[in-house]
Amino acid sequence: MKTFNIVITGTSSGIGNKLAYYYIGEGYNVFGCSRRESTISHLRYKHFKLDVSNEDDIINMVRSIDKIDILINNAGIASMNHSCLTPYDTVKNIFSTNVFGTFLFSREVSKAMKGGKIINFSSLAVKIDLEGEMIYAASKAAIEKMTTILSKELSSFGITVNAIAPSPTKTDLIKNIPQEKINKIIEMSPSKKMCDIGDIIDTINFFINSNVTGQIIYL
Image: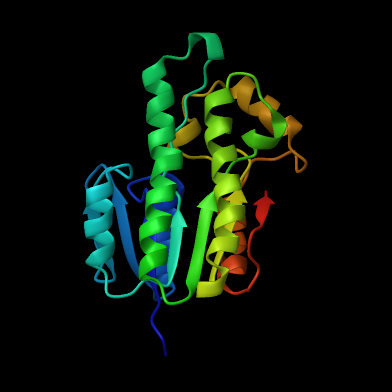
């Protein structure tokens, strides 16, 4: 039975942490990373402490892994604020993590893959044009365009590229957002409910087990 190697970014907490535990349980070899030390201790898990916008560290991480079958670009940060009150450093930090991190990992992993799956993370924020989320939504919109173009560029190498765009999910990313704002986002979503980690896993598994490419699925 073939053992798959999966790289998941942002595994110290939140969705990335839950994905790492799930795929370890499914028998995958999981390679995770974050700016913090790992909270996961398992024989099938290896952690890399790095910033996803650090090109040299990403190259070294990818080159240290024998083979990579699947990449999940999960690492992301957000900051809700009116555009006129958003510091430039905040903009740089969000784009460095969300956009540049996704680009760097996709570029380096795709060069190391012999066929494979890349799954990126977008957000419902792209579709609903929520006030106070311009920079975050813009970063995720960039990821969506990267996803569709990469799917064409990498198709001849047997690599599929797709994205998942959840509605609000109970993680550290939204813990400081006022409940009334969360309620407003949920009300604007088609499902009228928060996203569940099971929904995310089911969608990722659909991408892993199919030849679909260039798609963004909103949850």
